[in-house]
Amino acid sequence: MKFSALSLGRQAVAGQTGWPRQWRAAEPKAAYDVVVVGGGGHGLASAYYLATRYGVRNVAVVEKGWLGGGNTGRNTTIIRSNYLFDESAALYNHALGIWPGLSRGLNYNIMFSPRGVLMLAHTVHDVQVVKRHVHANRLNGVDNEWLDAAAAKAFCPPLNISPEARYPVLGAALQRAGGTARHDAVAWGYARGASAAGVDIVEQCAVTGIRRDAQGAVAGVETTRGFIGAAKVAVVAAGSTSVVMKMAGVAMPLESHPLQALVSEPVKPTFPCVVMSNTVHAYISQSDKGELVIGAGSDQYPSYSQTGGIHQLNHALEAICEMFPQYARMRMLRSWGGIVDMTPDRSPIIGTTPVPGLFVNCGWGTGGFKATPGSGDVFAATVARGTPHPIAAPFALDRFAKGRLIDEAAAAAVAH
Amino acid sequence: MLLIDCPHCGPRAEIEFRHAGEAHLVRPGGSDESADWGAYLYARDNIRGRATERWRHVHGCGQFFNAVRDTVSDAFECTYPAGESRRTGADIA
Image (cartoon, rainbow over all chains, first blue to last red; front, side, top):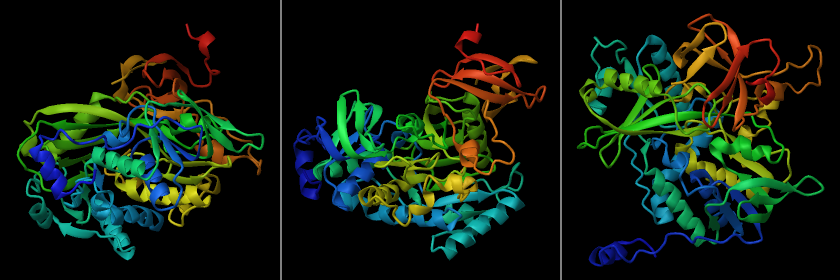
């Protein structure tokens, strides 16, 4: 069923009782051209673009749990593309170019809200680094501008720019094209679109092995619902990527760490944009439900526990109270953790692997949500053609052996 | 927050420590041009389950030591001084 003013009106009259399932719950077939391992945003977007843009329709997405139940549903929904290096600017700006038309393209409201992303500078060093990012971004055609403290306050009235603060705000970089989107809707919209294009979406199906033929090439995946043959296997498993890739004998340059976030009680609209601060170490926006959505730094040790230390959350809240003293008495509603796959250079890995037929899209670490549409597009192209998409090429797995790292450690909102 | 048993100082809160990566990585021989330096520098086991790792008691004795920890429950099985051989299941009382 298409979403339109007419169908919404009909459902309003009928009490919202007539909406069908938005994607088919498929039984796995014996074999596919491509099996995507992982039903998060990136995996579903990859399947969607394989089927709709690159002509590979015989595709399955296998997911251990439920769609978007991992990092897709646990992130802080921030979208921006103000990364420093040329390779990153191309990749993240490719995604930012897709976001504005995505709801219309999917016929599914992903609630993209380009409300602007402010990255604060609190020290002389911050000012120099932030301005360098602004200049590099502008040379790459990426939207970004420098605001002094008063202009930052005008854009974000809740911001405390008092010179009496422990780390006073000296200015900020503003990416007006950045903002937020509804994270669950991104997974659901891509799943719906992919399913309509013929992709089989198989939930509650954990991959337990990757079968290879006598020549070493991929033959399919062993799962809790039986063997599924595949000419190509595309691993998009975020925090569990190392575990899945080890099934094919590939050691990854990844460490999986907990990353926590929390939300406040819902309140009236009070916060107009996204604010990030690397120096005092937190980021914040307000959801459409009214909750303040606050992100913390990653925990220091590798873990698959999807939980972390309370001191990380305390640290983030101290920073929020420093920047926005008026929120000091707000109550926090809930907190949670996701498991993020961190690369040594904090840039993703997209492309081929030493195993013929095996592809991987991982290493998005703490900042993958913003890239979901672009990641899905360039990875789908890479899987369909067997050779890297030009935007994906610099992010190949072999860059670690070659020493061609893309060090974006400074691009994160908080140190990870 | 984790409670970590420093082999030199006893149990202390996690914020006194820094995690220092996978333990028992062996550096390739000095003049070996063919060594897989990329793998040594960057490839990690990233084990889901019992992992052997280094920690440093930065806000205590300052010493590095090794630990065996379950990365699903985050529970430490044991800690032991740096330089000792890798602990396996049989060694851990």
